[in-house]
Structures are given as structure tokens and as C-alpha cells.
Length: 129
Image (tube, rainbow, N blue to C red):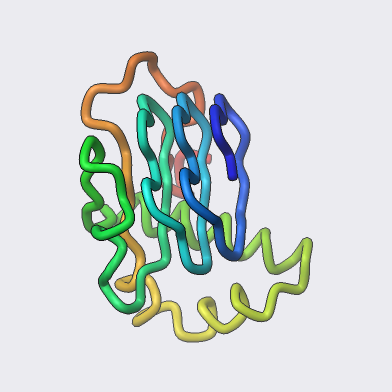
């Protein structure tokens, strides 16, 4: 899923092996399980992974290390999940939003430390939108 994504914002409720491989831009939110080798060759963009068991580090390419979300990232993630729920009626998204104070801590983010190009859609706070 989202292999070579270069600018789209996408939400998926699970992805198989090699998700977001060679991604150069955009935002991907995964609200389900992820296969192995996630984010291999990822040089830009942002990947939010729901990881309630804390095991995502086993599936992620060693070149991109998952980390905790910053406050602006938490806010942007909530906006994206809320829009996903509004557009699709997602039960998973609804459940996460209903318990957002705890659920937000179940996510990690992957953002390459030295992106090859500047992302035209950086994470912004609500006041900046």
C-alpha cells in the first residue's frame, strides 16, 4: 500500500508487506496491522502506524525508526482519522476517536530524518490551517 506515494493523504485499516516502500511525500495513516519491511526506502512524507501491542518495530525497515508523536502530529492525526470516519463510517476509526486520550498513545510515527525533498504538506496545527 502507498508504494512510491509522493503526495497523497491516505488512510488504510491494514497493509501487507512493504507498505509505504519508497514513499517520498504525503501522509499515510495505518489503523490496522502492518506487514514486514514497512517504510523501506522511505525518503519523505509521514507514516502514522497504530501499534497497540508495541510490536511495530519488528516490521519496520531498519532505515526508519518509529518514534512517539509530537503535539502537532497528534492533532493532525486526529483530524485525518475524523475525516476518514466521516467519509467511510469506519468502526475502527470511530472506536479510536471515542477513546482518543488513550488511543493517541498507541500510535507511532515514521518521518525520515533527512527527507530527500521538502514535503509540500507539512504537519500543521489546527490554528495554522
